[in-house]
Image 1 (spheres, rainbow, N blue to C red):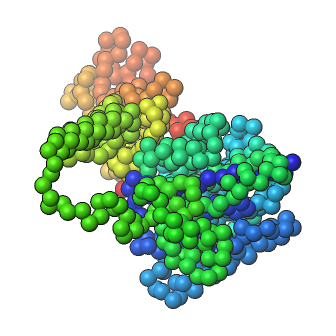
Image 2: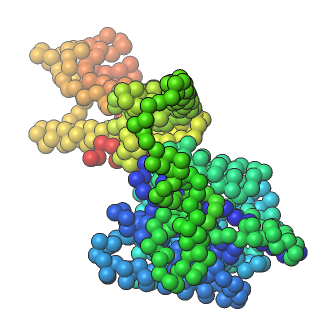
Image 3: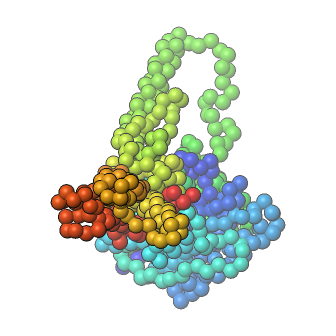
Length: 565
């Protein structure tokens, strides 16, 4: 018995991007995904070039040289990008990620740069075996944000490492032992950034072959909005008999997908054409399919799109379209038109029904709302409607980055996920409003201290609460106001307390204004200012009301920037 790989690869440009900058390659020994960046065709050039530089590794590599071979290939690819930029200034700024597995029969060598990912499904449990080289991942590692916050952070796409031809690159290199039954997934962030870890695990653990699994994963990403190019490779480690050569041959044909398949110039030189990828790509050009390939390419060598060859219209080529039609053809054509309209109408209805299973978090005027549908319009028809209005979550109390996310809409996979996201926004907004109120209260207290200081300076002695004697000097002017203390700002805490859930409510002083200083008769009716205990009648000021933050709220308060702009 020996171990072998059974693999499949697929790529799709997504729902928003105009072109596909991802490149993927799957062969008997090499599995690789590169996510290009740079725009103006530079991203697809970078990913295609890097994949082309690696495909020569799809030959038998001794296990002892595994990481050395991977490391050298990465440096060679990075150097090639530098040369290309020097030769063509329009390519300045291009770059690509790279995640690749090199198979020796018993072990896998892993090389990783950027935010594409590799996963291992073993015994039904999915684990990520690469670490994103991104700014938000560093924040997560340092404990400054959570994994959930990283998924919606405005700088989640900021790479700390990439292949861009600018100096030496330091890839992550490691060796992994394999077992029969292992399933590996390599993908660009167009998949991992849209489909949750749990959904990936459930899909990969299903009883489907690699080909069907790849198709299902791409469909999941598209249903999630498809905001980026989507490329993935699924490979199973199988126990095979040495004599089972037919099964091996069926699954040994290399698969090239994405930009490297669609743009043949990236592997047009003679060195690349001698590799399995080059031969697979050449095969794809020489053997046109019976029909144009869909945008999402799967499976056979050279998948990723083909040009329709001249003369492929078959029996309709050269037909005299000016000839009179035969009797009865009008009925057939009418039936076809009706059928086509029915198909289109059914498709539109089915599409509308699908949108009603989607949710996202957005804005309604100056607050948050949960929408049902997708954030798009079909002609004059809106494909979304408010499912739950949340006027209690005002945008002005959200941090700038969350405010921007909500305005750009936050896509979610379910209503439960939308509720969880809204709950997190509510908690953050409540804390930020408390921060604003605390700032206002401190400002008010500072003004009061300044007033007292000014009053003390004008009389030559500290201001004393009490009453002013009457004109006759009897001191019986009960109720004559001689000083007035502005109402304490505790009254502002009402809106906070009304928004706080029970679990977040913290003790706050009652909203009682500081009393004005007045004279009042004593209990005995003597007319002397004072209390029943014979004191001098000075009113004791109530303690200033205050707001406080729990430890959890203090952590959230660090993200607040409302009121300080």
